[in-house]
Length: 112
Image (tube, rainbow, N blue to C red):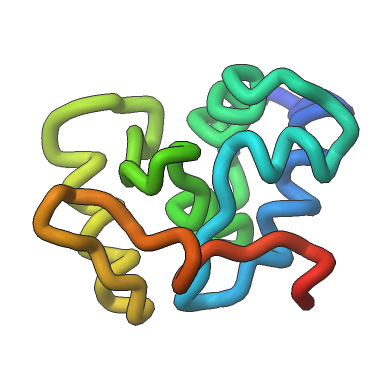
């Protein structure tokens, strides 16, 4: 971890994301609602600065339409491809359109 200390908001994001089980994903919106905010972009920014990976599995958070989205602070290039590879290794299927079927692989805490 760099010298930067995560904010209280970021810690709420990380605490929730820690609960997402292997083989499942949550959306940025699910995470935001679960921690009591509508700030989905702020959730994404918090995850892009995640100093606790892989204990905080930020790769398990995807866009509302099932698109994998960015990873490690990058929206394109090798990092999102690495996110796909990790999700596939955990058993999450990604369709030919590049999207995850959230009805099969989606997760929210009340399902735990």
